[in-house]
Image (cartoon, rainbow over all chains, first blue to last red; front, top):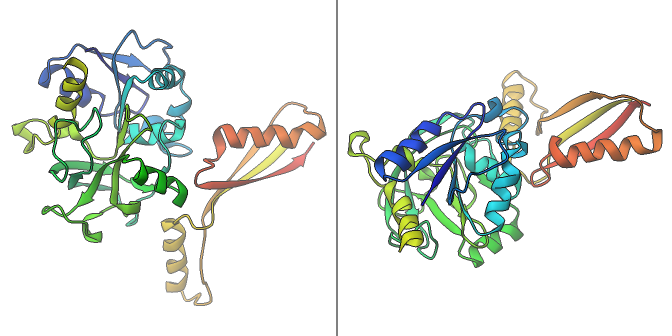
Amino acid sequence: MKVGVVVFPGSNCDHDALEWSSRLLGLPTEEIWYQDRDLRGVDLVILPGGFSYGDYLRCGAMAARAPIMDEVVAHARRGGLVIGICNGFQVLCEVGLLPGALLRNRSLTFLCQDVYLRVETTSSPWTSAMRVGEVLRVPIAHGDGNYYCDPETLGRLLGEDRVAFRYVSPGGTLDPEWNVNGSLEAIAGIFSEKKNVLGMMPHPERASEDMVGSTDGLGIFKSVMGALCG
Amino acid sequence: MKARVHVFLKEGVLDPQGKAVASALKTLGFEEVDSVRQGKFFDIETGPLPAREAEERVKEYCKKLLANPIIENFRVEIMEP
């Protein structure tokens, strides 16, 4: 399985993603420049966190129109795996691979802290090695992570089992106090219709080594490796 | 051609910035303020465009980039042909 990390001007978690994929999981991984028009045969695309184009216009809006995104969209439409983390999630919404939008945090403040995520479904390549209801401790670092979509879209997400993760208390219960950015239905991550695309605001790549205090972020990649490599 | 494009959040979409501005105005003593919705505008200059095409053309700018139709509406004013 070959992994590609797209690098936009202003990405700042591209190296975290590279380390996650190459050193911690031992997968051949390469950086892909945003102005390229070739994904070089990778099986899995990571859109990393950061502040692409300085968050000008809207978070992720400019990156969503970068040349490489035509290829990312085509890859996803063919059923290829794509994960967008933080700014990458914003880019996936802006480019239309995922529904909804990420609004300014309810508190209006930038939030940099650990959150607790509950795994909402295991019927996806990204969560197949986890348990429903499992609670992960993973950090967030964003100003615009407040997930929003219209009621019709929300109905579809729920009906099609496309909510990947929700913000919960450490004990795994829904509680407005732990839904720190004010996301609709405490949604922290969602899938595309075929579940080959995952977007999430929290950073699993920053919670994958004992050294940093949590390895809960490894489950996503382990699930994917299981799904791809059997 | 000169155009001004207004982009603003749709009704019902939470606008925490607008809320914060409203509460700041109240704090300053403007107690009559009920609500504030914050938006943005773009002044755009282009080469010559036939008058009847200009508006449609600028609407395309909005749909392709300037506004996110999921959360925002827009309004186009053609200032100078």
